[in-house]
Amino acid sequence: MNRFAAYPSLAGKTVVVTGGASGIGAAIVEHFARQGARTGFIDIDAKAGNALAARLKAEGHAAAFAPADLTDIAALNTALTSLERAHGPTQVLVNNAGHDDRHDLSSVSPAYFDERIAVNLRHQFFAAQAVAPAMRRAKEGAIINLGSTSWRLKVPGMPVYLAAKAAIEGLTRALARDLGADNIRVNCVVPGWVMTERQLTKWVTAEGEAEIMRNQCLPEKIMPDDVARMVLFLAADDSRMVTAQNFVVDGGWT
Image (spheres, rainbow, N blue to C red):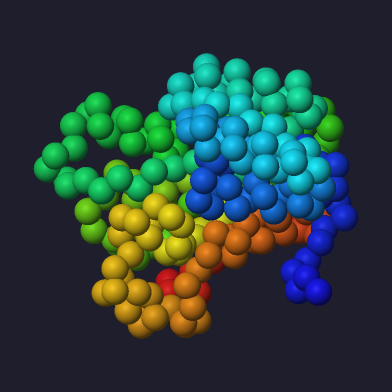
């Protein structure tokens, strides 16, 4: 028996996930598809995106992939238009894409600063801007932004990333106020240290695992599925009166 929730209100919903080809994003895409949503996703990695879409379609799910570099807002808008042609107007937007490159304060140039903001923050604003008109016409919608506990924990060695992730919580509250009159809900999911392939390959060591077990109240590794399930709840009608909030999925670390 499946121990996790099924949401009838997500069946047939049109969902778009940015950064959906791998990691947390891929888990979100898979979970929406298996809830019966018409799930589209955008990613710069065309090979991984096409493979995931093909697998979900083979399983009988409605999935569509549009490749794009999200730092190129024109390309982002083109991808959103492509997914709208495939599935219809976006009813749920999940702003997931981001990249946690490490960098030292002294090495950051203006160009690198702008590029990091573009990768981690700017596309969230413009994706919301693009889908908002259709949501307003429909008088309903849900936008879920992905933040990070990293800035709350003052993680060293990536100050621009932390600044961008902190700003996402402010953006969430601003959009919730501006869009709420049209019954559009905007919330933020704030993951802790999630065991994606990237994290396991690049950052998680025996010392890191010990730090997780020492600092989390729940001494288990957080998996992408754990974050995806919170996103599903915020997209479903079950959370219909929830907006402008941050939902931390970090095992109780912060």
